[in-house]
Length: 247
Image (cartoon, rainbow, N blue to C red; front, side):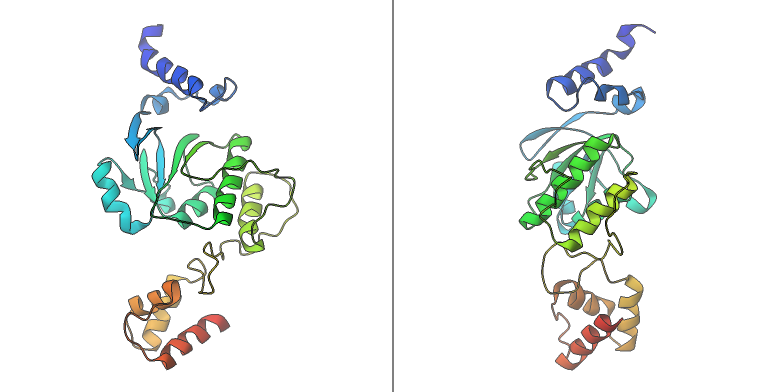
């Protein structure tokens, strides 16, 4: 094999180093030339971004993003399908990352403006990205996320509920830590009093819909958005919320 055979890959290695995406030590992890060969630059929201690229956006904005980036596809965490330009919701990204379902060593991460998460969610994402980058599991280049280096050995300023996510990720990465990650998936990123979207199983929604003879969409909006789009009586709404809180 001669150097010309890998000319494009060598150029990409040099670009990665020059732009500060990786260090010479991290370069050791790039042993699979086929993955590097598929790496390209794309222009998105005024940035030149290296793929693989994961765009965190509200699902309602996926079609608009596809118009800007026709090659973008919706990620499927259950089958570990993450195209080179992946579209995913915020909760699904967090769950995929901490459950080690993202297949890439290096990837860019863009938080779309369709989300305006509270400060503690930016802190949570910062902590998860930092854990990923120091673990040798991933090298993540973030965009549009308020990154603030955090001393992970000190308390991280997020709620106990969100800290369970960090705790779970550290355990998944093989760290020996004493922290509580019980039911870590029952979190509410938005700090609202409504029931967390991550705590209600689809089967529960279907069961309640059958029980009160209404569409699952009606139950979905009551639980996720606290909106009564179906014009249900306050009595039925209170019964649904009561059933959920006691389950």
